[in-house]
Length: 220
Ligand code: ADE
Image (tube, rainbow, N blue to C red; front, side, top):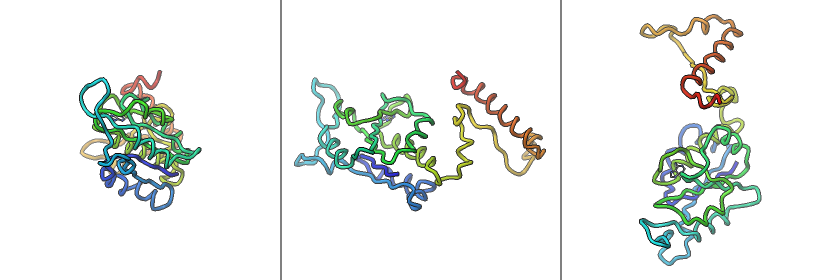
């Protein structure tokens, strides 16, 4: 998979994309990630990327030209363009699975007070990571990239994400490791029993109970 990210702050991605599983996925050639500072595409003599809003109001608005030119330099018929914005569709695991099957994703990170409405016409998807406003789309795009890249075949053991929370629309079951008793807190007996049918039943029950208790909205 190829991922291109349009951002005015490429340095924000350094730590996240150069550590852990995302780093290894790039080294193993499972994904190629490039950050593009769309300021470089500005045709303005001072490389301006924003301007005051028509009709007045506070703050500066990202202009169309640099973002259109940058996207058009990257886009092919196989690309999907994702615009990160708090008024987008709420992100969830099913979208991560669907995006992980694409060949080429282009993320547009908005910043400052907002972006020219016409920039939306570039996007195949508008996505929000939650009902709060971030200073820009950078952190949101990192959230998407992380959740998508781990689902690319071979990036993590398939078994790990077969058990993910949300996979069957339910939260994950609780897991334990040694010791069996830590400060008086015991591992459930059934997990020590070696009876795999019983263990499966226990886990399914825990998934259902935990979802009912914490996220009843998922059961609807
Ligand atoms: N940009 C600013 N806030 C955002 C959010 N909640 N989701 C996606 N992009 C954003």
